[in-house]
Amino acid sequence: MILTLELMLVGIALLFLISIVANKFSERLGVPALLIFLVVGMLAGSEGPGGIPFDDPAIAQIIGIVALAYILFSGGLDTRWEQIQPILWPGIALSTVGVVLTASLLGGFAVLVFGFSPLTGLLLGSVVASTDAAAVFSVLRTARARLQGNLRPLLELESGSNDPVAVLLTIGIIGVILIPGTSLLAVVPMFVQQMAVGGLFGYGMGHAVVFLINRLKLEFEGLYPVLSLTMVLLTYGLTATLGGNGFLAVYIAGLIMGNSIVLHKKSLIRFHDGIAWLMQIVMFLALGLLVFPSSLLPVAVPGILAALFLLLVARPVAVMITLLPWKMPIREKALISWVGLRGAVPIILATYPLVAGVPNAEAIFNLVFFIVLVSALVHGTSIPSVARWLGLAAPLEETRKLSREFDVNPDTPSELLELVIPPDASAVGKQVVDLGLPKGALIILMQKGDERFVPGGSTVIEAGDTLLFLTTGDLADTVRTRLLCREEPEDVPGPDA
Picture (spheres, helix red, strand yellow):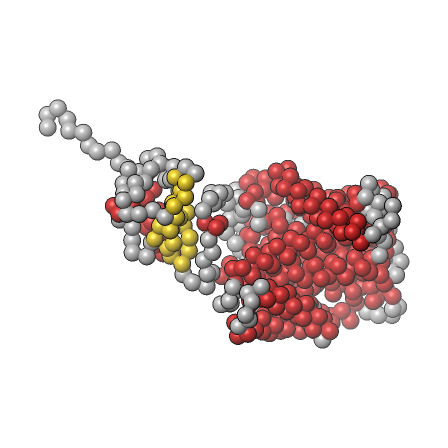
């Protein structure tokens, strides 16, 4: 059969469709999406039923870098500053000191157990030292893995900001291996430069995006997402060209934009959330295509040993040491230690030695891929159970029926409140006009059975009705109390009354 453009488009569309449908089942099975996408890519590869030949680490690396830039921007865009402010310094410590400690511990293990040279062992440790933003975001933002307090923003901040350190360690060690006589201390000034330039450019480009979106006044709303897409690539490219870390820059730029007043902000957040999912699928499919399953079998035993050491020793020890200055309950530190998801970033970093021609690069790549598979299976499936076992799981939110159809500007104090009326609520049997709602709380939609409508003052509230309010945060509790408090039974006069 001749491979035409039309057949290629059909094949790409089928890969995307299979990944999306498989992701739906992955939620029910408790398996993280990244594992599904990787498996689909492997099955579509030259050794799978798909038979697609792909063996170009350089192209996979480019795809991974671009995809990760958009994923990190989306993660920053959807992160509230008030959530990360209380845990800013612990998050920074985990993304710097924690990464170095993890790399050192796993590197030492590789030297002692696998017989690697110290530099090769440290290279392996550096490649898998950072947690993966795409994996952490996708797992922690599902209903199954809701966490109490500041745990989720802390873990997301760590995963979104620890990639630069792993990248610098990887590139620095490759340079030391390929250029004899180079000292590891040469990495230190490069690290300072990359972090400083990346942070400053990210801050500046974030404000530039906000300025352009608010001031350009484009005639077509559809051009605003295109503008934001362009600015992500410009931020990464300019920062990397000037010696900064592009990943840190795009994450900070997204954080700045997400916490500023921006035109069409809600639609832009949704757009970039969709782009982030698209990039995850593209990235994991490409990385899955790059792997030959037959090459994983020889590294199965060392891969399992390295993954277990990383999960049970290196990550917990690094977290405990890094968080010593902060008084946190031991069970919170234990959960942070467990949420060490590895994903696309280690696989992307594993392509750097392949492209550079480092000795044992292929063995390192296969080991890293195996470690990621084990981490996805163990971490991704067990985080909700471990959180419940440690008493740190937050209660699940009710499934929203009505509020998903409305948007409220996130920069205003207004918010949507959706309530389902229970049978014993005081509101049952009352007309809307008699509910005594506070000024500033308005019922904008009501559902009775399958019927949805805007209620009038004479509409009677019944058990099972769903009401959608437009109100403010300070009035939400008052509205809940007025409608959901239980109706106290009236005192029945006794026989002597």
